Image 1 (spheres, helix red, strand yellow):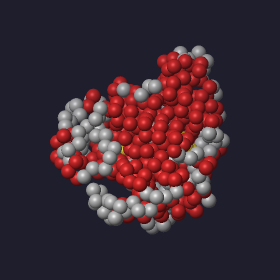
Image 2 (image 1 turned 30 degrees about the horizontal axis):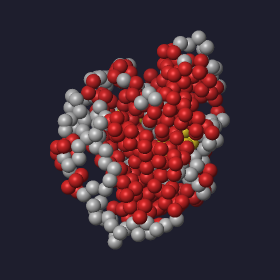
Image 3 (image 1 turned 90 degrees about the horizontal axis):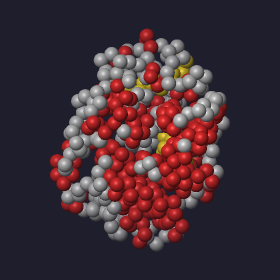
Image 4 (image 1 turned 135 degrees about the horizontal axis):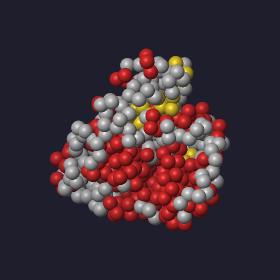
Length: 487
């Protein structure tokens, strides 16, 4: 089933990318594109294509766990080590520059769809859906930009090259307001996942808009809205997969897109056409054909799991464990390629010679996150007794006992944060959670693993709470100044 719909979807993604890129962004017109229904479909597919880039969900969000206490990013050439240690990165560094550029490429493509598709004579239901998808994707791009940089340019229309060079930054609050407005539009115009045909699975759905909106409200501490959005997802039929299926949610053998999954970035591997995921290439150094992109779990993460928690061994490969046909022996690995003596198992296909041709998807939103969002909101709004049932569902699913009933609000807050860290490890949440928790949380996370790897201390400074504006962008457009504090 998966291969059928992914061939259709990803072929569309590639065609969409090629068709859009054929013309300068300021010269798309009715005479060159935007003439018919096929153009509209190819254009929205081109927006999805951005998500599958290495600077987005094919690398960055997995690598972001290396900016927390969850993992160590070992190689300086990747750019993540410098950020994690706060040494040697600046406005010219590659990771911020590339993520900013790829995010705004997505925004530009979404704006093209939102501006041009309404004028195409085509099936009205499909038109409505495509516009809903474009608003959802634009919201996703802007949400990440606002979380990393704060104030960013809010561009909602097609611009000429000259206009692009004149934009200034808008307040973060205004950007988040637009994100919420885009998600409201998406909720009103997107079908539910059950209403999509099997060939269209992977597109944004109504429940994906509810799910992302719950996350946005969570980050803004708008607790009642979090509860409302999560309840809407629940009413649309989502739940947790059984315990034995937990690790397969992140693997093609679990068929991806499970009843727990709300939105995934789709990958089709083994084609030789760069349509596969890189997750097996990131940090499996002595497995044949897996590559060495250097992201390794820390012992701090491993030791945070409770005794008997199966997620520990579903998330991490330990020494002398056999995986994908090889015996992991740290003594046989060049230590330049292995920083912590542990390897990541979660989301890695147990098969040799995959490299960048994996067909496991990137899970962006799933129901376990919804329950943790709900637990956090209930704790802040109504206290620990209201929060406990939701976090206990996460724990009970993997055979752990309920949290103690005696927990106060602060103790429950810490318990929920720990559960988020363990349940959602290597899914692109932990670093962003630390940023929203505040400077003290990020400082502790940076410093508590400083002694784990000799020569790799992590230094906290207040400036790291906001990424530097890319120098490349500032050179072209000085209106983006002033630079974020400390940079």
